[in-house]
Length: 266
Image 1: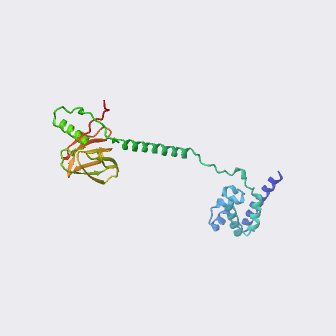
Image 2: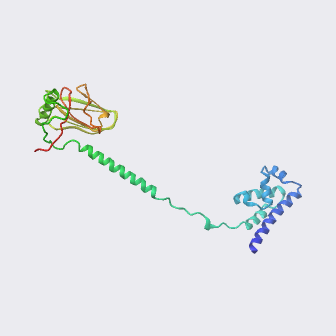
Image 3: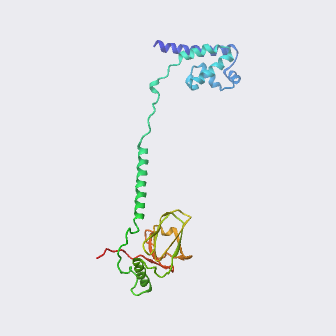
């Protein structure tokens, strides 16, 4: 109780001394504010000891010093009274640093892990598309190709040439140029099954391979590649599956035929 009365008395002395000194100079609060170029409410708050309205203590001390100098009071003495009247800050109320929640970081790591697993799965699937070893194929024609038609004859010839290593309808090597407009995986094999090229290709890039036809071509994104054999465009209409992949045999004349389905040996 005594401490509260001492604080209240000190503040009253500050306000009373400011008011008395101003009145002794014959100044109103408005006139004093004009001389100090401040809002009159600041001086009214000082005389009323309403220091909380002035903000932080550093602002209170600044206004108190300038006001005291203007009206002829002792700035150091008034500021000493203000220091004794200002309670010490309650350090227990200072907010402590709370570490950020780790949930967002864990979620980001989980998403990165899932994306990595998905990418590895796609790459593995694409790399396992071509058979590692030559597989026996049936002489059955794909669905929709009538027996005895020119297309059926070309398919049978291409399959027989691929298995026997013959050069097909071309007596020499053929040059296959691939231009990629999208990220595309592609693999090309010659008539003996030797791999001529395989891998991912960036947009706006080209690849050129030369080998003995019929060439076996496997494409992971058929919409992203344009083919030319010996300078002639190779149409892919009817060769692209629903998932965007294409597997076909390309003879020396530029004719493309789908690879017949692989079945197990009886």
